Length: 110
Image 1 (tube, rainbow, N blue to C red):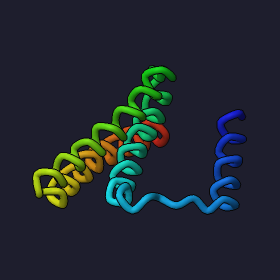
Image 2: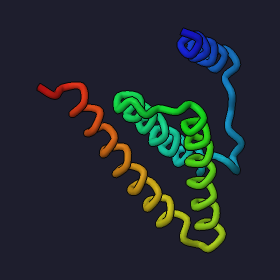
Image 3: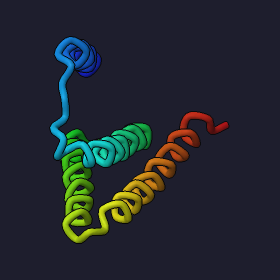
């Protein structure tokens, strides 16, 4: 219940305040969102498997976002930013689809 209320407060605050992302951070935002989605779907899968741990989820969420952003930053510094960004999205996408498949199997098993 608290999570739903926090989500609603965040959505309303975002709509009213119209936050902007600094230009220097804009290339990293899509990667951060994909990394966060990976952690969320992993958390849902863990919950359905009965092995969810809230501390592990928070650490996974933060570390996924930071590591993905760091990889893209290093790629930018090395001059191969688009290639590493694509690689990060592909790897996280594979993980997301794997977790979604496990969630689907858990919810729709006969």
